[in-house]
Length: 432
Image (tube, rainbow, N blue to C red):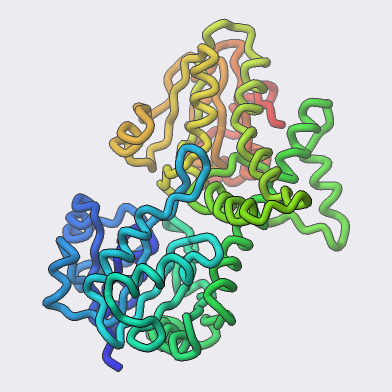
């Protein structure tokens, strides 16, 4: 079959898919963010994840109604599924995308959802919406698949060619359709067929919830050790000597972003519908990880004997080596400190200053100002550390090395001349 693919939602997931599929078949890209579309047309990729030479090969759709003239037969939906201010799943953008696609759905078309959802969402919400508006019947007139994204934002993140893609379908025929479509860009050994839509939906949640729970365990240990005067780094190093103790993938940290900090709430909400009293581990892990910024703020302020201290935070993205600022918990730390009366500045030159201002009302600095009671290293990025970091501190100021950057990367920092190894103020560096 000759496929023509329309991708709805051109964020870091959608644009990667578009650039891979366009090597094989015609691709039409649609996004409600017109500024983003214009950037792609100009060869600019703020996601730092694609070969920008492929952007010219994509046909960008200004309005979804324009798609009629291109007659696509595959629709891949990659819109965000965030949580609201009450930590409840918000699938507004997904249902809107599904509704819009339904108006143009034809016999023989395939609709694939990549957005993260709670179990049964595809079968119980998306498919009925498609059927009601299109007046077509799923598995007879059109097919539906669910294939959750597994990508990592940023230039060093996992790309499509590096992952195993989960695929599922609303029927056996649908599954084969979805398989054929993704086989255009991935070999057989990179495609895993799930037995149902629900298995694929739930697997995506389990992947990220496992990480959330493991990080929460280490966060709780770190906080307790810090409060009781036990060296947590030594504890972890000692525990790791056991043959079946493997924490290499997990480290304590502020858990933000659009996956680990969001996906658990989709399952918690789903789980709560069944109201079993023995459930609760996932919710508890979320509580632990949500409290980390408050714990860190108290830890910082308790070390400073001033009413209105000056603090600079190095790093603002939700994780290392990417410019993604969605749901960054560093903002929570910033708010805790400023609400307590601190004068707080943030330095992170890889982040888009305009977006940070629009979304968080914070003006990022280009460099650290002179005179700080505390410089808080929030991300494990050697590039954040200037040559003269000691000169940026007050005489009684200190560096809070939250991610152990000086410990883990000291030689690398020195070898790359990012800082004079001999000038690192070891007696003024603290860790948890």
